Image (cartoon, rainbow, N blue to C red):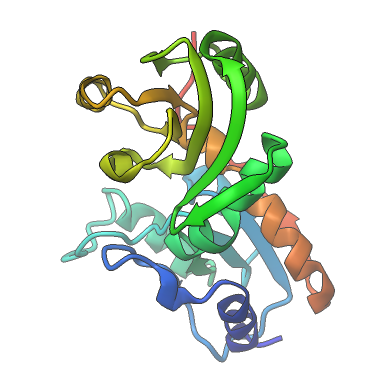
Length: 240
């Protein structure tokens, strides 16, 4: 199957035009006329993954390897070092980032991972209702996402309405209409802002909340007659 046919299928599934203006989803490396037999799915691109791939593979990732303005390719530095290896092995790459967050990822994590029913969805935010003690809920969330602890900002003992944005969503904080916000990459100043507006936060991790990307997409690609493989992409962080 030509890469263009796969791209069109992906675009119908999760239109690339839905990505944020700062994003870089779509075909990043490759030729639309390339014949593809094997597709590998991963949240990210890393050297170990590239070394494990067969030549002429299509790698579909959640995060774009080319993100900001790429002005040079110095092959001793990231991401040029990985791009060079990919080109040598004729590995194509399509990224499905914020468009996939909007159409699939947040909904899947809410329903399938947290086991809740979405009551409202606004862009990148899924809302659901709970009626729980904050500490109990935070521990449950940490367990579901296999986190070593519940890193959180507690503004009330009881929570009823929860908002979810996978990945890094703290920039949305001031538009959240809930008692508690679940998102990743929570920084110190994010926590201070949350306390000031009395919004409880639970950090669900960036990798931990988004690594479901591959298993979601595999279900949609399995009927194309291609070999679709989920890579064992690793969290760059370790907990000691």
